[in-house]
Image (spheres, helix red, strand yellow):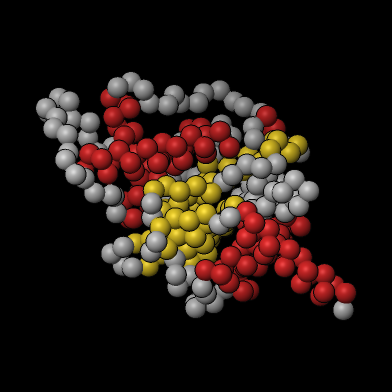
Length: 264
């Protein structure tokens, strides 16, 4: 790979956000107040560590107050080849943050000639969440989950954030959004140290189903529209989103098990 040469005054630097700021193209700060009911919010996302890496999942519903604003919103995205991010909170700023995060990682790799370490990626996202604090105070908070495969440690790692940009590494699982309490309970009861991807995916499907059963802002599976949770695995082979057909089959199997249990 041949790297471009820059004069000192033309060097873009490793930070894409820093480059935007120097060019006067940084995203504007939010001022004033906004009505919470007018803002679409993504609801429940979760991530589970396994011996093979990390499973990330999210429901498909976005709400504006008491209204369902979107039935098929996606909340789980690849950050780069070996990491992913799941978003909960104000949908517009969250989508913009994910796009800028992806560009920042791509920019760093092109300028430096190698990808940023997983620790560095987690720190970059922390800075982006912190820079959104003024918007969060106006009702546009974004609280992501970040996970990836650490090639140095040869294991999956998982990070959770708070609204101020605080970064916390989780050893077992993490959940965010309005249905996080209910989904966390399911994961907590079923999580074991020797989980593989397949079992963790089944747990994620059940956790989102139970969250939707208890939380009106979390969307459950919708066979009529063909809408199912977005689920992805992140391991040594990188980020891979599961096919909707596979998620649908696992959801059907879960519903059959629950039906048999209630019929006894």
